[in-house]
Amino acid sequence: MKIHEYQAKEIFARYAIPVTREILCYTTAEALAAAEKLGFPAVVKAQVLTGGRGKAGGVKLVKNKEEAQKAAETILGMDIKGYKVEKILVAEGVKFHSELYVGLTIDRNSKSVILMASREGGVEIEEVAKENPDAIIKVPIEADLGMTPFAARKIAFRLFDDFNLVKQAADLFQKMYKICLDTDASLVEINPLVITDDNKLLALDGKMNFDDNAMFRQPEIEKLFEPDANEVIEMEAKEKGLSFIKLDGNIGYMVNGAGLAMATMDMIKMYGGEPANFLDIGGSSNPQKVIDAMNLILSDENVKVVMINIFGGITRCDDVARGLLAALEQIDVQVPIVVRLSGTNAKEGLEILQGTNLNVVESMTEAAKKAIELSAH
Image 1 (tube, rainbow, N blue to C red):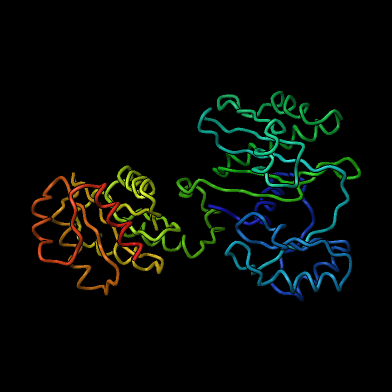
Image 2: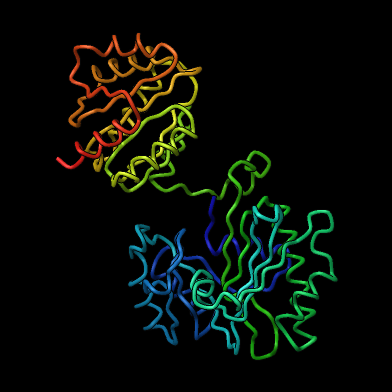
């Protein structure tokens, strides 16, 4: 789960992390009033749940009322990586002489929270990692000890020579770590963290992501969730017992089991195809799941073929076959369907499908190749 910059900085402020004065606005008039209240120069920033706002023209420095109005008019309604800008943040302009990056995230290799910091801030950390990986400091935080004052100072000394900044940074790192633990965050990031002209550290931007599986104990955080269209579909699928993620290809597929889903995706890509989704119907033998899954797959206009790959264990192949036939009676299917059934009651399932116009194959390899062939027509 992601939240907006202004929401992340509100959380930062509650933990006494210094942030800019800023006002959230939904209209040009609100933005103009906010800029006048905060004073010039000011910064007008798009609030969307994606990166790359600056490159897309969604962040503008304004020096007067005319520039503020023009920036707000330009940014509101802008499309940034498929996200429409519906609100903007007007922040005070700040004089600074250095930009840094600092972030806390979960590192699966060390099985701990890891702090990443760099003197190269203000740009995407992925670019820094690619072009100059040595510029990034990475320090795993021991779970038993946490971010101790000693550990925080030790990291800060790798970034600063000025002891005043070291003290500020050490305090900042400890607060960020506490936020990470308190909110079940999977990412707490400040980019850029700037050194102002009066030698103070200030969070100029903020980003936070959260562990979806922990939201049951984070009701206040969960209230901030703003699902996009794809996330709404994924949530609806989850309510029906389906695991679904939309992808960018044209081969829709349905399987039972996450492992088989990944293997099917790999098989499709290995033979040159592109999956349109990840869809796991799970271990249930309820035919309604197949109907729901077919509706979900076919709601994507990019799907040119549907591949059904079932390995029956708990899931019975005959139930899947019945669900598929029921789905075909209810849904106007305009694309070919490839079916592979194996395992529990596969023979019975195949018998049920006899006499249909479905493309029934015996192996997963055949299914992938046939689906790719049909997707090309």
